[in-house]
Length: 225
Image (tube, rainbow, N blue to C red; front, side, top):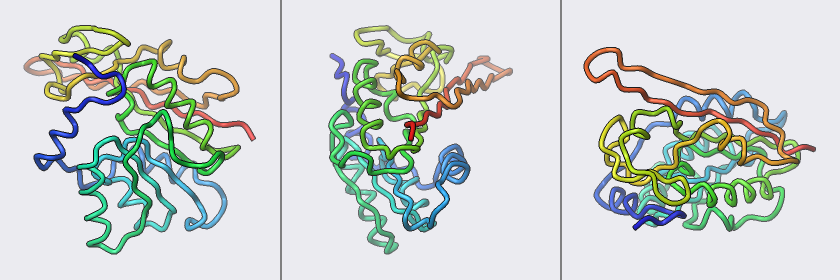
């Protein structure tokens, strides 16, 4: 049985020691290319689905004002312990992406690195609406879901809310339920007054052996000033 808001497989993975330590290059690029023209310490950034805090840790070390939210208490506990050990400050919370616990217009930048793609499509639409609310006017959002062209999308079983389960092939075996996006579905997350700034489709093809395809989206949208 699926849960469109959160796949409990991630609580199990984090409880058994899953931890990503280094930041993702797409996130570092997004932040440095789009940060506002003010001091880093005054630039407020939120990661939706921060997991064990690899991106939060790095950007906080760089001097930005970081917040992170995740549905897994185990992930947040690991992230907080790492930040405390290294004396790095950030606001980490366990919570629901469709009810972000922050005031309106709080953040300059918000990003999602393959977290919302584990939720149902209707849930993701609500979460992106919440992102719009907490973004400051002129702020930007980066979203990184998996593409329907992915080999794993074709190896599983499609169920309610555009979720694919029982994935048996490709690079996402063992990752639980995933919502794979085509272009139209991704664009549906950003009704007016969102302004979509860019939408990149990244495809990596394994040309030897199984000839598998890894495909994902990098989307960037603006809350108008």
